[in-house]
Amino acid sequence: MSQWYAAVDGRTSGPHSWDELVALGATGGIGADDLVWEAGDASSLPARAVRGLLPVTDLPAPRADDLVAESVAWHVAGRGDPQAPAMRVLNKMGTLRLADGRLSFTTPRGTVRFDAPVSELHSPAPAEGGAALELWEGATRHRMLFAGSSELGMPSAPAFGGVVGLAETASGVSTALAHHKGAKATVSGWLELLEPRVATAAPEDVRVRGPRTGVLYWLLFSWKLLFLLAVMAVAFVVAILVMGAS
Image 1 (cartoon, helix red, strand yellow):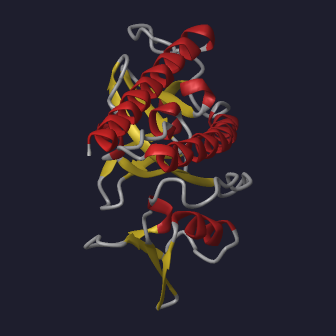
Image 2 (cartoon, rainbow, N blue to C red):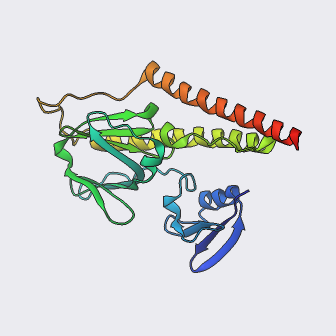
Image 3 (tube, rainbow, N blue to C red):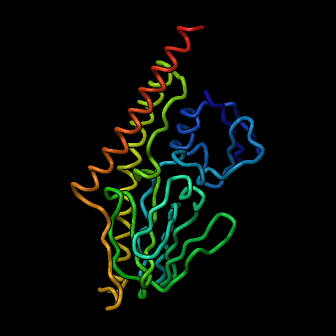
């Protein structure tokens, strides 16, 4: 079982189990900028950068004179149809921000991955079953994945974990479903803010490929889930055989 530590207002607490840490985040005991780290880690991270630690919050209410909204997200971009394995996406975590009529994405190290006037973007749409946001910048498509999209929310299979590992995975599935619901609300909020401000149509020379939706999306998601369950079953059988041979 992993052990975590937190530094709040200069005071370190811990060790905490993951569930205890999440409970602190849900009740305000850990803020977005407070530092947390797992036992054995050489460095710490702000709580907002740890997936699943803090609850998904609603976007700030729009203000006519100074519209500002931001969310932690994972970014992948490409020509037409960007697709990337989860590990590549996880290396592109940062902040999606709308301010002064511009939409930008900045990594924790301050690298600006894109920054464009909202009026020059087009074709906003929900993706990943509604838990991710897609936007186009000319012929470049940007996908913003929030904690809860299927790309980020799939629970990992237990490695020779037996009954305990299966229980942890079941808990992970429940948590993933909760985050998926929260991410859909976040995407809905972003679409409400962006749709009135982005271009109404794509440029004539750009072919927009819509995100996978409906039956096709859920077929692909089900295939991912079946593959995960198959890996879990194999790991469980191997664990039984290893314990029986010892």
